[in-house]
Length: 379
Image (cartoon, rainbow, N blue to C red):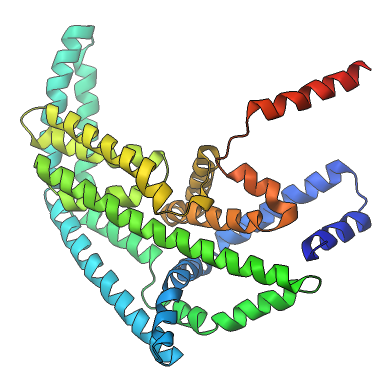
């Protein structure tokens, strides 16, 4: 019996409470936990991003240490290269976003023309009063124009500053990478009272799987962004690179992100191209890219041991948005993957890890259980 099993057994023996009392305590504790997460999000969100980035950068630091570079210098070099890459990517992304925001009113006007044509056709075909539709279009157009230009740029900057606190996250990452041996040894000392070998194995395997998953997620994002951008460039869609990158970011959010990612280039194709067939071409291209992503990139590159089922993916994305907004949506899947990895390596929590996964049990294995239970009731 390992440490976790013994602790659960002790708690179960000491707390002989009715089920409804335990359920109330659990709900109150859960509410308090999420309340603290919401109140302290300004501290917690940068720290979580720093932990994720530190896990990804740890193999790079180890590489520099293996070639006889001092650990502190290795961490500084790794951080400098990372900041350089992120700064270059950020400058390019914001320049593209600025161009897009400047032409936003023109896109709104073109989109209004397309909607007017659709309204004329729909009012004649479905016998709908076009006056009500025109009033709604005028109202929608005014709202869209009000969000143009500086408003869009301001929104992008606010999101960026909320997700990445440029001066705080590098400090967190440096400290986490520097004190990584201390943190791991602390975990071993806390949980290694009964079986230290098992705890060491859990820590090592968990760290390895998380690194493979996060690095695979980055590679997947880069490949999807490249395929999106190339497909849109071949179709002649404006702002192809910006939209392709946004689509790769949204691809992290399962199912919901994919729908939003394809809707944006389809709308731009409708208002900038002479024929609506280009929107269908965009939909077909994105569908083909999703097939490649789901059937090759995710199984081969992203760690297959960290597959989350659709139900809990959507639940945690919505919960992350409700708790922390846009940063919470992007953090929800990696955090759930980390939780699943930990659950899969702790015996009492393995059923919960199985519940989060996408391995469907065979119905043949379930039917005998139902039959035996029914037999017991009849006897």
